[in-house]
Image 1 (cartoon, rainbow, N blue to C red):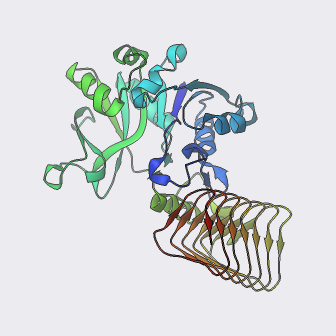
Image 2 (tube, one colour):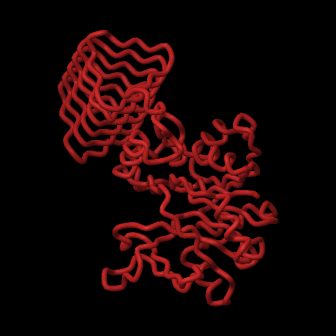
Image 3 (cartoon, rainbow, N blue to C red):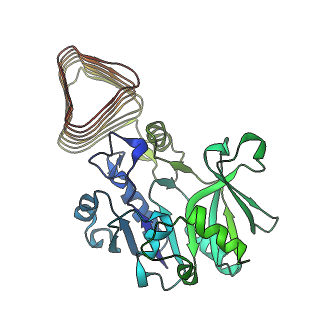
Amino acid sequence: MKAVILSGGFGTRLRPLTINTPKSMIPVLNIPFLEYLIKRLKSHKVSDIALAVSYLAEPIKNYFGDGSRFDVKLSYTVEEIPLGTAGAVKNAGGFIDEPTLVFNGDVFTDLDLTDMMENHKRNKAMLTIALTPVEDPTSYGLVETDSNNRILRFLEKPSPDEITTNMINAGTYILEPEVMSLIPAQTNCSFERDIFPLLLRNKEDVFAYPTDCYWMDIGKPENYFQVHYDLLNGKSNQYHFNNGRKKMVTGTNCIIHPSARISGTVVIGNNCIIGQDVKINGPVVIGSNCQISNYSIIDDSILWNSVHVEPLAKIKHTIIANDCHIGSGSIIEQAVLGNNTIVGYGKHIKAGQLVSPNTIVS
């Protein structure tokens, strides 16, 4: 079986993090998000994978290469202009010559891909769509099915009085090669708005694969936080936090001062320095090559690589991207800082602030 991963989105809702980092390369527990998905596919014996890329494609290509490091075969299709979810798959051309998995590149899930494929074959389906329950489907597209899981109707972002089910499109599909003939070439075309309804109108066999497995759309900062909380607390079977042995995991070559106080679940990357009387209150994730200087406090936050925190700084419920410098005595609360941000001495970044890359807060 083959797979196409849609990795070309702009990640608008995650800005400023995605201004110069592709959404699929956003780190989750210090590992690029896309790496989890590729390893998930490999674990289900899917090793021929096409990455549909566009915006900031080079960092993806440079990291994953031909896939041999992950024991898979990777190819790349590049969109010169945005083609939509279906158009991006059409752009893969002759790659899809057998039943193929298609993934939205911003969904973290434990979906049983092998069982989903078996259902697809058993139903002799033209298309199978994974569904997942949510508390409030008004922000998504709900999917109505009959008792045999045959899909009857799609409804995008329903109003409260239109809700008939809490099952939504989970962003994972299996499609037969014949579906490709319905997608116009080099045209912006959406599976959700264009192709799926067309298949229903054509009375094709379109089935749902309902599941209550772990599922999270990481496309918003609050969801990005949540997937970290969930993984650290064992809610996903993809990552068991240090097999429950202890609350802190550190990489290689780290120096942690004996007086540093670390509580809760904490992940620290390679080559980090944690200074005297530093307080780290988990859940906290710190990337590689970071320095947390004396008397600083890191609380419920995610720091990417090469972040330097000067003494007496306080950081709470904040995401700090690569190569940032946080000045002594500064306070940052509930904010998101893009790459290469410099926060000056004693500055206060208040809740809700989004700081663009290369900004100097002085």
